[in-house]
Image 1 (cartoon, rainbow, N blue to C red):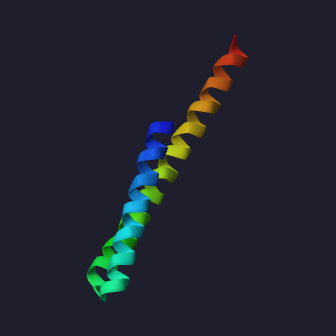
Image 2 (tube, rainbow, N blue to C red):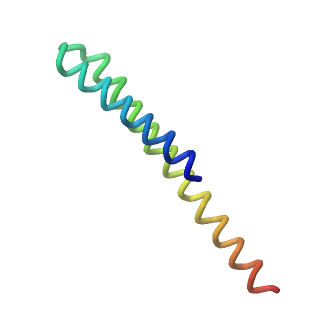
Image 3 (cartoon, rainbow, N blue to C red):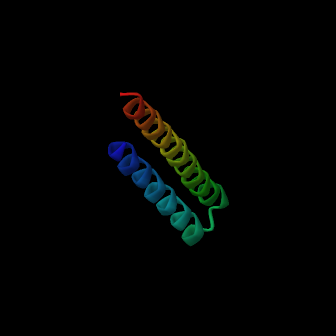
Length: 66
């Protein structure tokens, strides 16, 4: 899911940007939003990684049957 990976990377960068702006301006809410965005993107990436691994296992099992 390469397209998804790029999307998650973009979400992480956006979160880092928010966090950085929050740090620079002293805006704790913006900083927290940035950290939350990064965590969400990491979680989504983790889910996609598990899905990819499951598909790989399923493909391997199908290949072994044939």
